[in-house]
Image 1 (tube, helix red, strand yellow):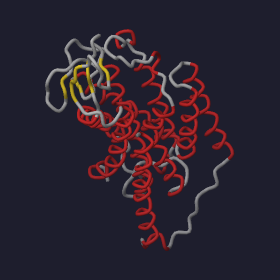
Image 2: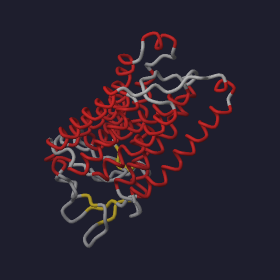
Image 3: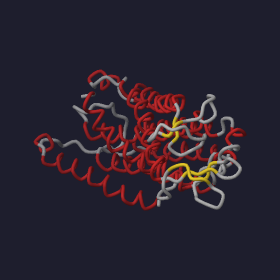
Length: 326
């Protein structure tokens, strides 16, 4: 199912890209433009290989990913590093902080998660669902605007800003959702409430949210936005930054993408993902003998829900950002 959803997302992304390219070709400004894409330097190729390799190796040694997840993550990191160093910082921030969050109070999570995996090791499917949409946008970034660090400025550089905000929003969404589930379930005393009905449900229920969890979802996205913002300030030419739109809204966009991404994930989880409680009091995602249904239907699994949420946030937040951030 996650692979099928990814396959559906590819043509959607291509439609956006084709429309943007068609507009650029037909616009009067492009007729007088003779600027071509700069050649990618050997140092950037090397950086795009070495840094993702070190991150993948670190994650594998720390048991944050298995071998398939490390290899797929290496591929994603290569694309995003080659396109823009700010994209690299977004995925690194998500990977490092979400890995730490997964291991936070893991002994307590075992008590109410029947499918809890020690160390939270991610395989290639989980890496695809969290970073697949960003990788597609990274490829479109390379094809459409080339490589390099650019400020977010929808007025002067619409297409690169659109794609970059989409990538930022993807990782902010995934990080916000991870922080909400990993921190929110073990911090605080009360049970969460189902986002669709507001009824109290056991911890670990898909679609269950708490005010603490929503706060952490905003903070998780905020951290991704902050790392992106700092990278832009330190990699983009100062003269270009002075002429560009203010960059501080990047941090706000990251926080909001984390919050709304977590809410979207919870709504989908409460309706399209099965949640039940077994005889041991642990939450399970499949019906079975002795399992009491809590909410949702057995249509999608957790990976597909994560992927759908990231796609929705990645495709909507660039437009929403452009409304209040010219």
